[in-house]
Length: 427
Image (cartoon, rainbow, N blue to C red; front, side, top):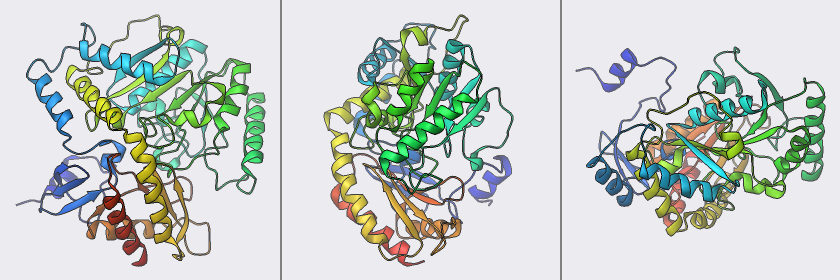
């Protein structure tokens, strides 16, 4: 009988990557653990790419989904939808954006695509500022603004994209500067970039912590400094919170709040964790921006009653159990344990992150050259010992991504760190 892997290769595109030499089929999960088809149990430190945000098989979410499925699963945005309105009210209130409107999509890619549509329509310009090392999705328009060649299969784009320094603190021409001087240099670079453009750049889109790029981030306050420049030119700020939202960074509910001295973003995008595995994305913007479209625009699947029910239950659980606080407390412990595990390992260049969003960058010992083979070896060794983690990185970087569900316990953090240490020592 053909294996599931063989059947996968026969019908799924070659560019749909699979982790591990012997890919695993995850059949079920509970809490912070999942099981594969062979019955092996794993501690999950990646959560379906930061998507299972609270816990696997969270009873409150599965109950809400089952009850909604028993009533009606789908209707589209052409009809009034109580769960959608209720979740939109809560997200608008949490966003920090005044007079906010919310549009739901089915993914982060689609959310960013919508944000680009709004910004370019509002500003009547196809010029976009993006960060180097960034990732914003796999649609035609979001690939066109992604500053990471590993995720850019085409150079064609409907947008003119200009890439700005600042998303990566520890590499590049400004890496040796103090935080204050780093911000000053990046602002000067932004000003210089704007001097090269035609008038009317539409927006800057930025991840407060770059996800696929390897959990890199600038010093706190960089985007506030950028915002002051953008405001002088009327340019919008889009904060891509697909991976940083909902308290994952521990210090803040949204990643933009580390840069909030100049106020909230004009547009905020979200996805992944809010659905705890259900397909939810969305855009928040103040009314004048959200309502600028002068043509019909609906969503067939965005705002589905069943996904909205899941989102409401998940958000309620997150807030009622202070999972942001848990991310701060347990995440602080975990990053210290990972740093201790990495101490003395020549291949580890840096351990970085905040909350439950931790990156472990690997290089060839004694150099700044990425070592993807080492990253793969650690990924494999961790899985062999019962831990699932992720990979990422941009230009010449190779990073292990550690992002457990936000309900992670202290004992699970200790267990995972011990497995990571064992995997690193195996190098």
